[in-house]
Amino acid sequence: MKAFRSSVIAIAVSGLALAFASHPASAQTVMRISVSTAQNSHQGVAIDTLAKEIEKRTNGRYKIQTFYAGALGAEREAVEAVQLGTQELTWTSTGPIPNFVPEVKILDVPFLFRDYAHARAVLDGPIGQDMLKKFESKGIKALAWGENGFRHMTNNKRAINGPEDMKGLKMRTMENPVHIQAYKGFGIIPTPMAFTEVFTALQQGTVDGQENPLSVITANKFEQVQKYLTLTGHVYSPGVFLMNKAAFDKLSPADKQAFLDAAKVAAKANRDRVDADEKTAVNDLRAKGMQVVDKVDKTKYQAALAPVFTDFEKQFGKANLDKIKAVK
Ligand code: EAX
Image (cartoon, rainbow, N blue to C red; front, side, top):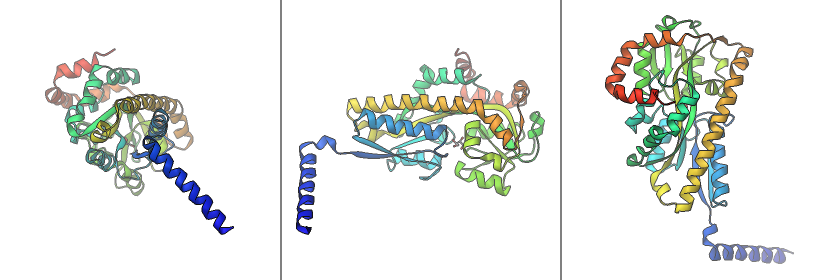
C-alpha cells in the first residue's frame, strides 16, 4: 500500500516536472500590490479588480497578491518599495507623491476641480496622461489614474459651519506640502502623519480631526472616533496605480498591454465604488451618530484661501492652473 502510494506520487511529480520542462511559459510569476485602507473599500475594489484582470488577461501566468490596510507599510513606504522594486505594485493616493514626482503636486491644489466629472476628464485627458509619464524617470511606471475622492473635514471639537470654525483645530493631514500649506491658510494646525496611524490618533485625541473622502471615512469607521463632519469637498484626491518600472519593462509587449488594460478596468471599478459610496455614506454616517453639515458655501472656503492661491499661482503658474480649470 505504502509502495503503491509513493509510486503514484512519483508519477505525479515526474508528470509535473515534464509539464514545466515542456511548457516553461506556464511558470507563474507572483507580484504584490498594496493599499492603505480595508479590502471592503474603493481602494480594495481597485486592487482586487487589477489582480483579477491581470490574471485573466495573462492566463494565470501572473498572480497578483493583494495586501490591505497598510499591511506592507503606509503609502509613502509602498511608493518607495515600488521604486526600489522590493514590491512590484501599489495603489496610492497622491498624498506622498510630491516627494517622488513633484510635477504631480498641482493636482493637490484645493478647489481646482469642480466635480467628479471634471477631475476624471482632466486625468483621462492629455494633462493627466502626460503626468503619468513623469513617473518613469523616477523608476516608476504609472499604469493609470484611480480615485480616492473629494475630501471633507471631520473633527471632535465642534461643527464646522464656516471657515472661521476651522481656526485652531489640530488636524491630521497627509504628508503633502500642498495640503499642508493650504490648511494653514484655513487656520488649521496641520499634523502630517501616515494614514495607518490616523484612527489611533483620533481615538487618543492626539489630533482633533482629519480630512478624507466619504469612501475613506466609512471604510475606516472614523464615525467611531469623530463626531462632526462638514462636506467641504475642499480638494480632490486622486489615486494612482504604480508599478516598478524595471518589472514593467521586463514584460512582453502583449503582457504590458494586458497590465495597462487591466489597470483601466480597475480604475473604472474604483470610480464606480466611489460613486456608490457617495450616494450612501452620508445617511450611513448620520445613522451611526455623526453630525453632518451638508449645506456648504464653498465660495467662503475659497475666499479664506485667497492669499494661499496667490502663492500657488506663483508656484504652479496661473496658466497651468487655468488650463486644468478650463477642461470641460
Ligand atoms: O487611505 O492618507 C490619506 O488620508 C489618504 O486619503 C489615503 O489614501 C487613505
